[in-house]
Image 1: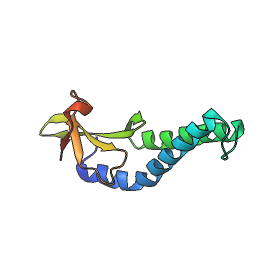
Image 2: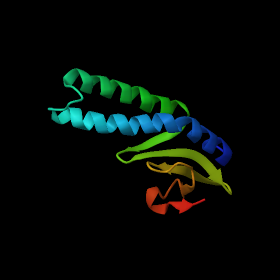
Image 3: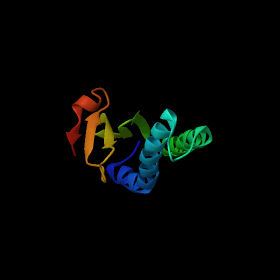
Amino acid sequence: MFTLAEARSELTTLLPVLDEIVRLRADAAELAVGGSSLGGLPEFKAAQARLDELMETVQKTGAELKGFAPLLVDFPSEMDGVPVLLCWLEGDRELTWYHRADLGFAGRRPL
């Protein structure tokens, strides 16, 4: 469980990792179709391996990687005794959303 302050601090640490995931995801997509100036199969496999490492880095923090395209990361928390997920979506630079754990992304609200 994260407090809001802890989740925001962890997100600050994770932003470079998340940015790299977004970049590598695009590279891997391009490499997968072939004919890319980025390389071929060896580069594709390397990108996949690095993506696995980066995603593991996120998971080890206790955050939950919920989506890959777009990238979605939830930080388990609690508000007024109710389980919530502090919700970060690709493109955000700060943690400013949450949703009840039982509602999912559709129940997303600003903090």
